[in-house]
Amino acid sequence: MTAKYLVTGATGQFGQAVLRHLVETYEVAPADIIAASRKPDALADWAAKGVNVRAVNFDDAASMETAFVGVERVLIISTDSLDRPGHRLTQHRAAIKAAEQAGVRHVLYTSMPEPENSPLLFAPDHEGTEAALKASGLPAWTVLRNNWYFENLFMSAGSVLSSGHWYSAAGQGRIAHIARDDLARAAAAALIAKEDGKKTYTLTGSKSYSHKDMAQLLAKVSGRDVTVIDVPLEGLVQGMIGAGLPEPLARVFASIDTMVGVGGLSRITTDFKTLTGVEPQSFETWLDGQSSAFRAMAS
Image 1 (cartoon, helix red, strand yellow):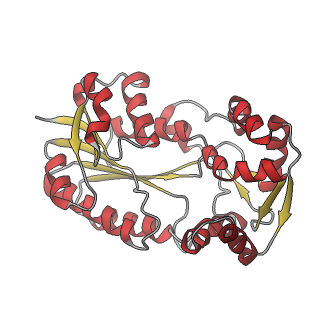
Image 2 (spheres, rainbow, N blue to C red):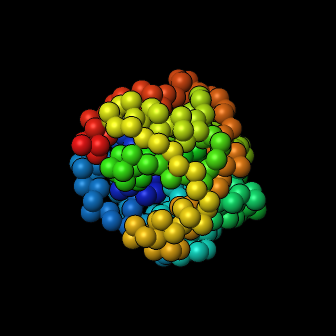
């Protein structure tokens, strides 16, 4: 069987959104889509709609080679293996090699903005994966450098709204973040694009925000005053550890503030509109849509 498009990580929130945009937004025939995951049984709803389902385990190269056979274009969604340094890069390199061996024509990969020399501790995973794509024998590839999700705010909003304090080591740095659903829409658009080639897109929102800007907007929708408290990086790390986060992950998450502080997420592009033909959702609009969740956290 030949299918045009394969999406890895299809059981995750991002993968699910990509599938939805393929079928609903871009009206791709379900038979032209393969949803791939290490948990294929969890894709039964998509299978019932006519989407093909295949098992893919990024730690099993043979499973990827088998799943990629007969596929024209593969979207590799970066894995979530953040607790084992270098493991994710090994997984991605194996996926690219498997795609080559299976005869895939075009591989797309979800990366991050400006991974080169970034202070973000997992940036080398993305930088190395991009390098592996460029060094591969693939006829075509696309790098989707995704800025931070609006939804990442939920990771800290609970403690911020309960205490009224946002501890930040980002200084005056700004972030041009974007809704996860918009990034999924852009990935779906890139996956079905007619042209081939070797391209890199940096996908951002249309405006950038400092942590103080974000805190003011969060306070407005939640009804809870939020004060940003500037702290040194090590203080942020120790605070996360004190809240129960393992030190390796605390250092990874704290390095996000360092990246924001040096401007690594501040660049604004029009690449999202280039791919989709529409403007990205604004942060203010997204916050309004999530206001009930934030008010519940603040109560």
